[in-house]
Image (cartoon, rainbow, N blue to C red; front, side, top):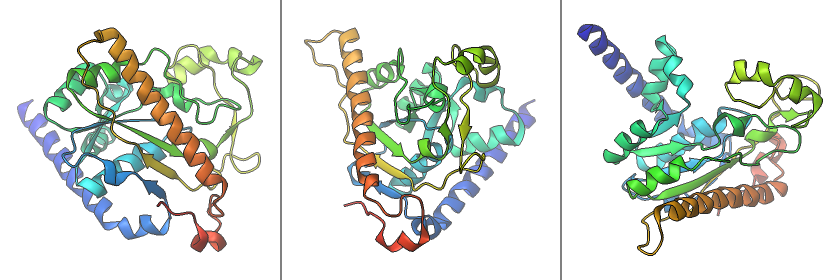
Length: 281
C-alpha cells in the first residue's frame, strides 16, 4: 500500500513537470492565437491570492487559460478547487488533474492550500454556471455560494476577480430555462451533470451542428479585493459584502470585455483580420 502510494506520487510529480514544461514551450503558439488578456501586472507578486471567476459553456477555456497565464506571469502553479466529482475520477485522468493543480473543492482542502500560501482558483457557480440556457450568456449563477468569501476572510486572502468572454459563445442554447424541455429533463440532468433542479440545455455550434463556433477568448484579471474584516462589521455581514464585491467585480469585467469584443474584427478568428485584432492596453 505504501509503495503504491509512493509510486502514484512519483507519477503525479513527473506529470506535473511535463505539463509545465509543455506550457512554457508553447508560449509562442499561444501568442499566435491572439488571446486577449490584461490585468496580469496587478496580480500580487507573492502568488498569495484567491482567483474567483466565471464558468462558461465551453467547460475548458477558463479552466486552462486562467492558470496558464498566471503561471506564465508569476511562475506559480494555480490550485483549482474542482467539483466533488473529482473524487470519483480514477487512473491517469485523476493523476493528470492533480498534476495540473486540481483538488476537490471542499473547505478543508481550500484552507490547507491557503495555509501554504498557494495560489487558489475557484468558480463559485460550479456546474450551474456552465449550464446556460437561451439568453443566459455570461450570467453568474452564484445563488447561495459564499463559501469562497468565508474562506478568503478566514485566511486574509485577497480576492482577484477574473472574467472570461468567448466561452459562452462556442455553443448557443436554443431552449429557455423553465421551458417544457428544461422541466422534462431535470431528472435526467441530475443524473448526467449532478446539478439538482436543472435540465439539459439543447445547444448548437456552427449552424445546426455540434461543431464549436470559432471564438476569440478575452480574459481580464481585476484589482485585488481586500478581505480583512473591519472591526465595526460583524462576520456574516462582511462575508456577504465580500461576496457581493467579488460578484460585482466579475460581472463588471464580463460587461467590459463584451464591449471590447464588439469592436474587434478578429472576434470570430477570421485569419484575414488577425493583424487588426484588438490588443490589451
